[in-house]
Image 1 (cartoon, rainbow, N blue to C red):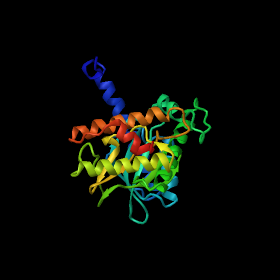
Image 2: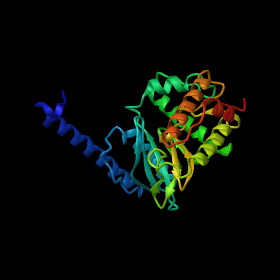
Image 3: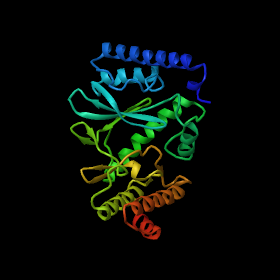
Image 4: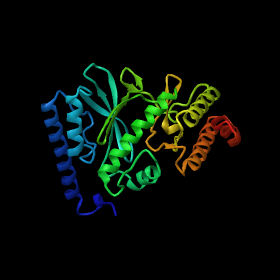
Length: 270
């Protein structure tokens, strides 16, 4: 039964109110430390702006990476992405992973077997920090392979700063929300990126779909590469097949048919 429908509703509302007040208080202290000018949407809950996150944001502000933190660009199960402004007045995406509510089983599933990381997976904070570092390193590898992804700026604790994809502070929509005007051209571009990921970066995205591809002025931009795996990982082949199935499904919805065999050959060259 919904707590709001029981006699406990006033208590629940009081608890929520106190949590929001704590977040407002913490953010107020942040503004006093550095001209970090508050968050437009502060009701994201104290699970986002916990003590660790606030300390990390202080450090990033004092290092000149971040001056203004504005409203949420997107919210997910493990992380929220906010729009930030640097000391040089450039927009930046600020991705904050929630230590308290992250899906640790999922993180363990994707990070175990990755030869780049030796993590005690029973330590939640260490696991989240490794996860953020994994996304940072995956972005760098993809960028070096000339795959269009957000350029990573820095990673610290549970916070990742990266290039803001959008125009004049307005975030680019996903291809799910804004399908490409030329679907066949978009398909070939994405297949080329998947080929470069596989053969140059030696990565498999593992969760590729129109939800994780932005449409930036007609150009596909791949995002959310935290779960991407190196080819040496025993699950890489399985995740490649998942990406292929997702792309077939999403392009079919906008009128483009493509076979799994064609995609597999274009991506792997086999």
